Image 1 (cartoon, rainbow, N blue to C red):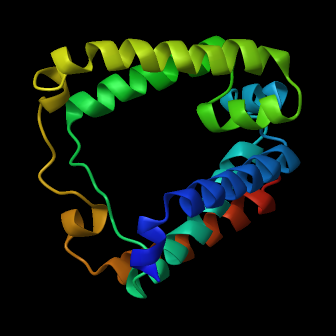
Image 2: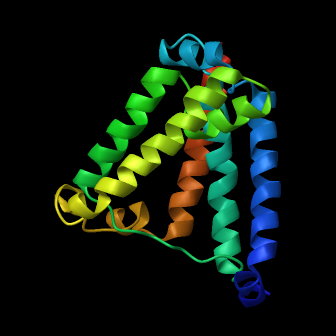
Amino acid sequence: MNDSLHKNKSLQLILGLLIGTGFGFFLQKGGVTNYDVIIRQLILVDFTVVKIIAAAVLVGMPGIYLLQHYGYARKHITKGSVGTIVIGGLIFGVGFAVLGLCPGTVAGAVGQGSLDALFGGIVGIIIGTGIFAAIYPKISSGILQYKPFKYETLYEMIGVKQIYLIIFCLIAGIAFLYGLEYIGL
């Protein structure tokens, strides 16, 4: 099944559209497509965004592991570096600071009819992507290769099996979410 899915580009596009639409729906229902919710997160008075991200990670980690284990998914890891983290962080941070939304929440906000997300976010993403694509050949062998990471994954770096790291993260993540609720955040 996995090989037939990889060869069927139309099905991949349809699945991507359906999953993306579902993702946007849940972001909107969770409230994180709202500018005020994101700003309250940034000033540390509303932890809705952290809770949704943590919940998504806690579902995604074992889900992706199981998909890989049963042959329905493959890793496509690009080795990182300090340079890629700094450049990516700056691009993401500038966009987030200017608009108050990240790329995922921009798409969800557009879906709920936010014109600022449509014109500021989508147009900004297109312009930013174009600029990055134009300068990528000049920086791909320079700053983006600055101090490459030795390991591709966290579990390789700390020297444990992937499943053990997932179990630890599930326990720690559930405790973290419970703690946030317990103290009223």
